[in-house]
Image (spheres, chains in turn red, yellow):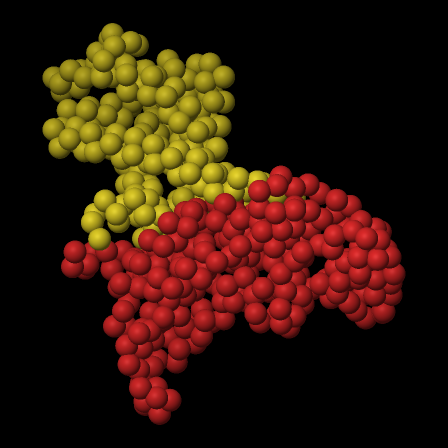
Length: 254
Length: 234
């Protein structure tokens, strides 16, 4: 692809802290290489803001190679920007045209309060995982793992669910701010494997209870989560979660 | 894990929507089937709604059906109340909205179930007033009864004919049925996903059946008032 430079207007959400109201600010950015990533463009803008004596834009980022799930920008009306199966850090500036105005917002959800600017508190996801997204029985060592017969299709489906990086794009995209795609990925990942079997029922019941406690909405199967997920987690995991939950609640002892 | 906890969790609330939704889907098949008896007039011009009147009389006079009717109303009320509660609750989960909303990832009707449901509810109130209230309580428009083989019954066919003489009523019915079609287009498949159907082969099947069902049910219902006002039957 041809290497060119862009001049853009970045309209970005600025919010001092989680108590303040926040508003959009527009900044011109000049001479941005189409080979830059979106975060590098924000880096350039922040350098300029610092030089001008202004507060740089706070945003989450870590690995910058699309696997950690930290970057979380809602760009031009879509989590992680216009590309499919992509994280913000892997979004390149060639996705935009010269003269474009790019609107950048934080994830919007009551369960993800804004900390500052584009940074939101996603610790609700950590607490959901803490509620049951683990295996606490002895599963032996790697050799034991390899000796367990697992259906290839199930192993593949489990691995596909395990791809979830917990970025929260599903919540940001959902009209109900539902965390169901995230939760279903975590539940499916373990429910499909023999190691997850012993805690299968308590896991799904506890994780759903924690999700509700955190203030996420309920799922209405619109499919927006699946369409925006950087790891292409399938919405069929949500149906599996529903089945797991139904079965677990029917056979629960108490 | 009490039953209350199950049905008040986010998954459980959806389960209530799905189960009541599927029961209403089944009801619509019966409703459309009974009402489609009016089309017997197309084949036999001497019919004058006899088959439909007899079918309607059977539905109204059979004890088991009347008991099921209570269940139907309970299902409708639960579906409506839970639907509104869920819609309001879900809206509260995002206190600050987006400047640019995300629309590409989902169908408009899947995001508008509350709105479509409200349109259907408005239509339903008018529809119940036209037929159900008349047949059960007021007897308005049903003063002249009809007798087949010695059995006296309401002339529901006559009431339909008399109701569908004004264009605005036909248009409101058509719009109500179109809202229903879109509501079902999402609701049908969504209900089964909520019940936990995630196998690919069933999903593909249910999506196709869902779309087919929505179109056929809505088209059949729209055809009824249209047939009367156009003079094709009656």
